[in-house]
Image 1 (cartoon, helix red, strand yellow):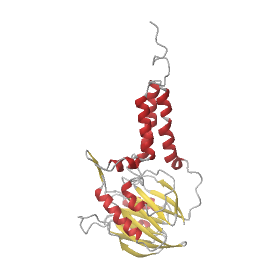
Image 2 (cartoon, one colour):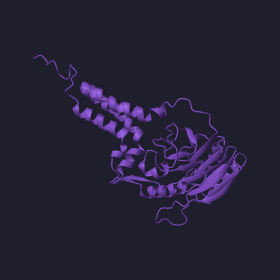
Image 3 (cartoon, helix red, strand yellow):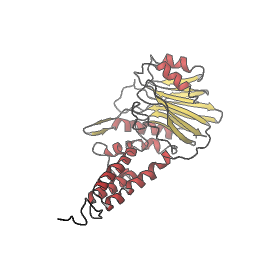
Image 4 (cartoon, helix red, strand yellow):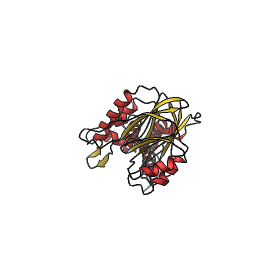
Length: 317
């Protein structure tokens, strides 16, 4: 018996692939409007926003069944998430020519179990950055950093486990208390200093927000979000116009949990610059942000002895 003209094995059809087309539309909506996903239970919304660029993998994943089913409807619908991803993340991939930078800064969580802090410090010095912010700086690692950076960055300040090395004089150094409720007084992960640069005074913050965990119940980010609110209050009270924030914020800038911080800073320039984990980076949780200045480009640097990659950013003042 002859096959029917519209047999899936022989012809394309507009009738098949409705489920695939619906999934394409859903992926497009989530890419453009991730905020429609509620953050309870399990902070699913923040989890989606943290890994939002990877939702682009839905395009090839949905194209395969569309082609196998020979569905005009599904194949056309695949354009929806493709266009949505290009609109949201295309400028990060094809940023165009960046303006000349006035200052380059580096942010790096050096890891409190880094076996080679000296070589890590030398790698950071070789970047020739004007400012270097570090987190998870332990007491045993501090002398190695001081020795390796003394010549290139003669000015530095530390508070708890965060540090700032600078080519420019630092004044007004103080602790920034971003401890979530219930955390002991020995937990110090924030500092603020004034850097006297050739372009004027800049308030520089270095911060390390609490870690998050992904488990069966979803994303555990309550303490991180609480710490972000405290950091946001400190930034809001900063009297200097120009501000630079260097930090391991334990999430991406798309995560609504960082809104108390991100809403006070100017948009960050292009570049995915995935920083974690160092062996197979899937997200940039190390951030460089600025206010009354423009972060024109962000990029990840070669691996050190840390489980994070260093992040370099060019800033136009």
